[in-house]
Image 1: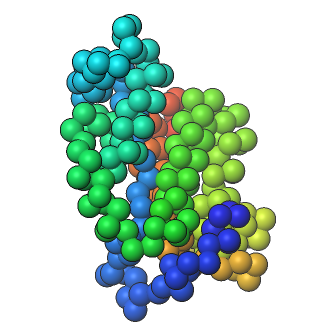
Image 2: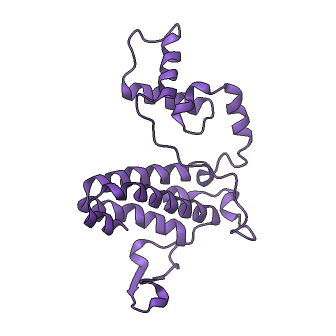
Image 3: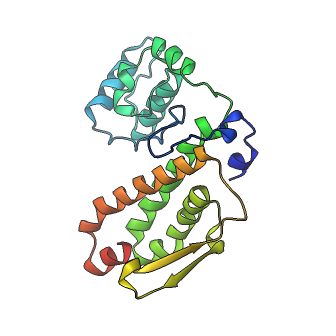
Length: 216
């Protein structure tokens, strides 16, 4: 949140005439979850690492391999997919850097990764811990998603239960006077909502009936 509010780059002033049909192509993307240790692409990267003159004499452990693949992805301008780390070329990094018109903007470069990492960690913990995780961890990421989507902290949102079928359940009344995010942050926040619920929908069938219904 401090990073978002401290960003003084031109990104904070950008607004599109029709957000529903346009996009801010310069915004980064959340990093993908790391592949399992036996992933074919990751093992190819391990073989390449072991073939170098200065490579370690022993095979890399699980954590070591993921770290090395992450460093390679960062050095060569990858997209965060560690399964493809073995295919990266240095020329690809130069091209990727040139395509970012706001390299000094925290919102454009880091915000999607930071929010995606936060939600991935919290959602994974929440789903594994059941009711306790849903009640303790879920409100943390929900409050940040709400703040970047509509500009107000969780405490500023009032939910009014209605029975009229017109509203199909709960009606949410939002007070957005406290802090207004720029359009780039709104787009990042809304996109992360989609990622979060897609992850939840993937896991719900594996939960017991009561817990699955609580998440939905």
